[in-house]
Length: 362
Image (cartoon, rainbow, N blue to C red; front, side, top):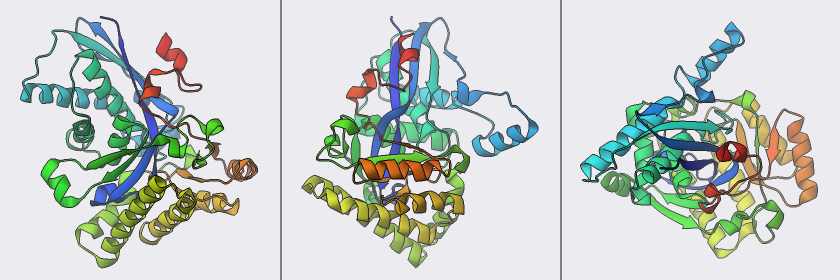
């Protein structure tokens, strides 16, 4: 058979983050400026080809220590293997007969690493999409994020939640409700895809009656999300009142954002985005460098919050003059600023400028 290609986009948590890990609510979108591209080609034996994330060469002892502290000892191939294992187990358990063929899996990524844009989960979700196409298997979409989550959390011991895998499997813009009782009963949340046109699904140039979004990041500010959550998660599990109240407020902010978007009240979003970060700043230990990204963006008149756990921010701007000022001030502190192209499922099969189209066609 011909080789199978699949793709998963980077993602940004627009509101509610980090409520997905605390039985709350969150609103996220995928964006196509950065992605993981994966291909499966039929082969005699099953083979997983290392990608750039699996690189084992270093320029200096300092670089080796730095990379291993941030990225660990293993890269993306372990994620391909973990997803493949759980996919096959799912098929066995559900009586799904698979075609008798093996594959060689190869991936490439240009998602900036460890800045909260979900590069690792993009590898997992791209692999699951590719396996379903390669073996012609249909899994209900609401179940697919759980498979990706269990591959990382249970198989590899990575501290993570549902949110990233949900948005990368669904694409576009999704509101997620992780009600405790529902999650414990169904091993997933309630997922509501929203109209991605509300945040400019066709790209910023065609976005008129929609939010004007930007994303800015600096790889030098990379942080391990597990470290960021460890202390707060322990306090949450200990039922400390202020942390429980904060998580409830995160969920409320996400719900208000969802309702505002559906009602067309886009003017409510900047205030909610700012409130989301201010709440996080009260209960999390945020490094001065990461907080400065938010403050610099706000100094230009934009709203701003973390896109994930640090290293990248997301927010809104009012017009092109403000975007130019925003980009200039963030560039002065080492940040790259982009206008996100919303990554819908339809775009997964398209060639997108800057997202490795040449590799996909080779």
